[in-house]
Structure formats: structure tokens, C-alpha cells
Image 1 (cartoon, one colour):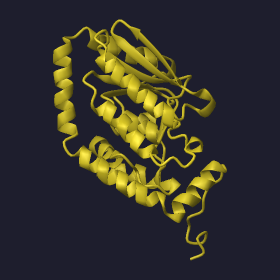
Image 2 (cartoon, one colour):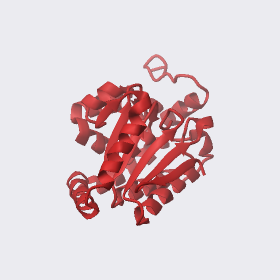
Image 3 (tube, one colour):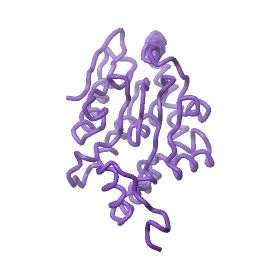
Length: 255
């Protein structure tokens, strides 16, 4: 398992640890993370869950090299998001370094997110010839509004820590070396509060924010599937795996 899991004083820490692939998420890792979250939620000794990445980065997102034509990858991503959305206990995230694609979608589903000053968030779906899946457009628009969501999704521009705070994607920014410590301190604070009241408040917030998200996720997944079958998606993926930039300009397309 590419995770380091520890429990201390009521906090279950789940750390992504796949440094050889920059913590990118394989099929097995999606399933393992979903199960780890469910286990934490069902453990009476756990009150708060803390998600982080080791060492010094959160996650490069989808491990495209490990897909091998798997047809159920997006369904397994959906199951992971279902596990997150179904949590009764608060889920906090500490982000160091880059978070890309699916990793950002996971963060958007967390209750609180704290990041280091050199964290970087990226949603490069358009640049890769893909449609943003799993309701990320709705989640992003709910955080920062339609125009900023459009800017970041359509232009596929990375988001700095400072900008993430301004766009309300994160709760606070700390020095890189302090982000895990500061996030853990807030997790411990939650552990000392009345647990049923905390969970009830979380449920109310989630209900207010996710009332239409289920249908949005289904719509996004269908649009994502359709786009994945296009020539431009194939060209973009091939360029990504070969470490080069695809050319979708009018000149580059020969039009």
C-alpha cells in the first residue's frame, strides 16, 4: 500500500507515499484510499481524518502510465469521491508542493484544506484535451465563482498558494515546514470539541453545498467519457506521455 497510516490522539493521518511517481494515483491506490477513509470513519478511536502527501508534495494526480486501457478508472475515482462525500467525520488536508488534476478534485471535496507557501494547484484537463470530470466545475465555481472557475479550467493555468487563498480554495497558507503541524493542530482542536456536534455541523455544511452535486458529477462523467474518445484527447495524452506539448493551434491542426 502506497500510504502511511497512523493514529494519534483521535487523529487518523493518511499520507500518500508514492514518491517514485510523485504520488500519482494508480487504480489500486484509488481503492486503497477509499477503503482507508471508510476504515477511519468507522473506527471509534478516530474523530478527525488528516490527508497529506509524503515527502514534500501532495499528488501529481492520475497515473496515466498505469491505466493500461482500464475502462473503469473513472468509476473508481467516483467511488473514492463517494467515500469522501460519505464521511461523517471531518476530513482535513495538508498540502505541500504540487497537487494536480484528480488530487485537486479530492481537495475540493475535503472539509478544510491548508497549504504551504510553495504549494501549487493545477487542473490541466482542457490542456490535455479532456473535460473536467466528477463535478469539479461545480465545486470550483462554488468556491471562487463562475469567472475564476472558467479562467482556471479553460486556460489550465496553475494556481499558486497565495492565489488559492484568494480564490477560497484553501483555508490558510503556512510556511512549507509548518503546514502539516498547523493542520494537525486544527485536527486536535476538533478532537477536543463535542464529537456529535462537530459531525452534525459538518453534515449541515455538506448538505448546503452538495444538494445538486450528485447529478452534476454524473453529467460531468458522461461528458468526460465522450471527450476521452476524441482525436484531440488521444493526441494530448500521447504528447503528455512523451513529455512534449501538443499543438492545437489553427496552424498546428492544418486548418
